[in-house]
Structures are given as structure tokens and as C-alpha cells.
Amino acid sequence: MPIASITRSPGVLEVNPSFPAKTVPEFIAYAKANPGKINMASAGPGSAPHLYTELFKMMTGVDVVQVHYRGSAPALPDLIGGQLHAMFDPIASSIGHIRAGKLRPLAVTTATRLEVLPDVPTVGDFVPGYEASGWYGIGAPKNTRAEIADRLNTEVNAALADPKMKAQFADLGGTVLPGLPADFGKLLADETEKWGKVIRTANIKAD
Image (cartoon, rainbow, N blue to C red):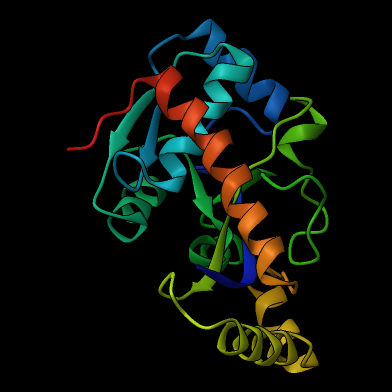
């Protein structure tokens, strides 16, 4: 059963600095002029980077090639080294490389800009309605007593209200998601419906 949501983890569309596109419109135009020639890294089939890319393809009509890795960690060195062109990646794992100038961010995947990358626009600024982000939460067995679930929810929300906790999440581009178990349940239902449509449209299968 849902106990509490903790944080929302945004993504970023990033490219190797040598890639010719410097904005999302330029990226889309380049992709349409060179169908099937942009190699985009993925953290594996069904991963957040994979789904973010599939949603982007659905909403823009671009034809890019997904190159699957076993997570972001092995994909990022190849993106930095130029073997790949671009990637949608959680900001938490890419922010260090962005700050070091090893990767160029084109846009963040959230509905609004982020404090951690204030000068970087959102994908939705150019692709209306695009929004994608991961999230973390706490669940418990379905037969957990209501008083226990409520106590856990209260303690989690208290921790999320701590300024130091908020600052740590913000430094990685995340935002806290305090709320009741019902709020987390609605988030689960909404996300399941949204990404289920993407998975079915892209015909993504479990390995």
C-alpha cells in the first residue's frame, strides 16, 4: 500500500558538446534531416531514459536510434567520449558532467525550470505538453494497519520539511513530494496510465 512519496527526480536532454544542435528546435530539425542517424543512449529497455526518449519521439515524430546500456553509469562515458550523440538522463547522475562542461544540456524534462540549471529551458517550452520525471516513494504490505501507515507518513513528511533535506534534493535537481498516502496512490495510478500508453505505443517488451 502507498505510504508516502518522497521526491521527484527530473531528467535532462543532453548532448556531447561536439553535437551540432544547441537547442531543442535545432535538435529536432537535425533529427528530421538525418533520420536514424542520431544515436541516443538508454539505461536499458524500459528504463527512464528509454521511456523519456520514446515519449519525445511520439510527440515530435523524430527517428532516433536507442542504444541500450545496463544503466546510466556505463552509458555516460560513451556519450562524453563521442561514441553517442545524446541522452535523456536523470539530472542526479549527469549534473557533475554538465557542471564540468563535459555534456551540454538542451532542456530539462520537468514542466518548469529547475534551480540547479536555471538557464536551461524545459522540453515543454518547445514540445507543448512534454513532461517526464522519475519519483521515489515508500510502500508497505497491503495489510499494514492504518495507524502504522499514518505514523510512517507523518514521519516521512516531517523529514521532507527539513530545510537541509530539501537543499540536498535541490542540489541534485530534485523536489520533495510531501503528502498523504492517498496522494501517493494517485501519483502511482496516474504514472502507470501515462507510461503504460508509451510502452504500448512503442511496443516495449520485457527481456
